[in-house]
Length: 443
Image 1 (cartoon, helix red, strand yellow):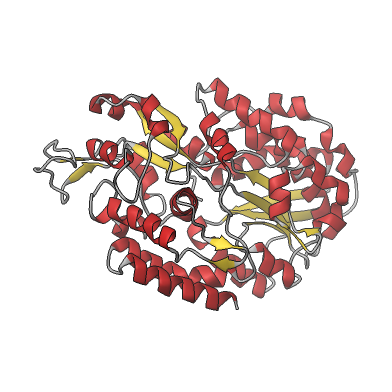
Image 2: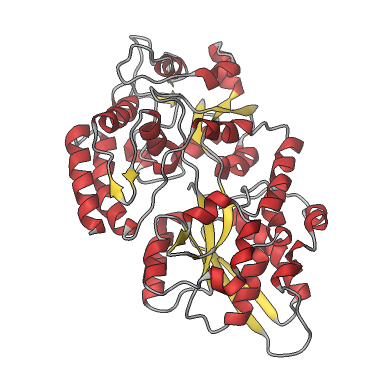
């Protein structure tokens, strides 16, 4: 997930009134007097952190004995620091976890069993796909917070107009590893320019002086390569086992790597490997025409883009346009010194009233079902049609990352992927090495 650095200014009080009262069933009401307790919450998204500030202010009025403090740890360092802090018993009371990491912590007794803490009926209020994603051994190990829809393509309407490309055609683009029926690459070449105004399909194009990129092909699991795998009938994993080293998997990665190193329609991996926000910044600065990403970057683009933009469907591969969909949970420290207060905060985060602020700012799609309409309503007021992010899911989905020891596996294959995208390691040889390393790591 890309780092978000800003938040849209919007009043959320109206949204909270609409969904108010739903949380009462979780026993949130507080009482005066008693010992004052502080519950700390850690996450990686500063936009949602600001939405949380609004939400927790309402919570604290109903629970005057509880103060909630949030800490934002940048995505790039988040899981390294989380692992260290959990091992050192210095982690926050509540912290965000993604699907690739929660099982390890649940199996090691680090997380509160939410099914026991809030009751089995609590999960009925939350996105079923996220509940399923974070349930193991019959227990749910966190309160669903974000429920990303699918992946789409953000486009710069001004750059498309300059190139004579109708925005409506972006949703109909196809990529083909054989090149026979590829309509994506020709469009990306027309949208990539050098300092002299030559496009990437011109014999005079200078790839050392690119001033405008067509696309954001990169070593990006969530926005790019897992979707290319799925769209070519391949997958990152089957169950916990890594299976990306297959003929169709090789085709998918080769296509992406060629967009960078052969056709030069996307930034160098020397930039994107070291800066997860590089392509986002290129897009919002008007230096990239098409930016494939998810709803988690909607607010960033709305805030940062000074041009007309829209959302289109992601390119379809031989197997169609097959996207990943993911969720994020707020997990609780099983060793917290404030279990009762933590349970109250968890219940609040899982309520429609508690999640309304997230949706009302447009910063993310809430995993609390009754708060999702607030999110959709917000983007309608911004004249942004985000339906392609949802309609792509009708095509089916590719399995998201999962499994115990996922972090170990990612640490094993990650450096190899970086070399593949840099073009220094051949795709086929690199994927075999990476898959062997990943599967060895999960054992």
